[in-house]
Image 1 (cartoon, rainbow, N blue to C red):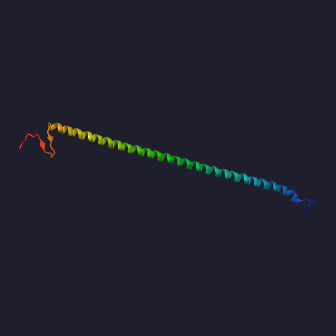
Image 2 (cartoon, rainbow, N blue to C red):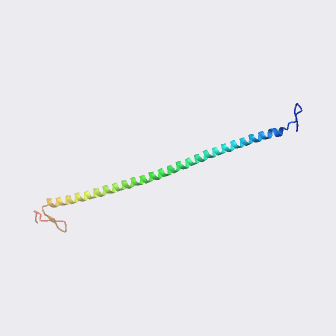
Image 3 (cartoon, rainbow, N blue to C red):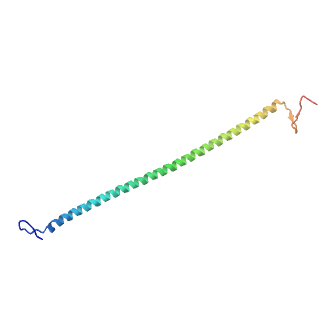
Length: 122
């Protein structure tokens, strides 16, 4: 193909093709670079999400363990309180029984619950 105003024979395909090829190559390289950067950003976001999920999972597991420890401590404290309360009640009951026995002055109740050694005699 030839064209020209001055009668010069210039093959425009040979002139423009290398330039277009270079531009296309540069454009493709830019697109590949952009795609790679997008992929890296996406991967980084996903990795960050996974790490955050793991942190939340571990925190939840730790919280549950702490709650179990608190619950066990509360149950133990309640059991200790009840045991102490029961022991104190038993001590008071024994003291009361002992003091009642002392007040009666040695009087002993018989099998039918009648007092023996009363001042009243029939």
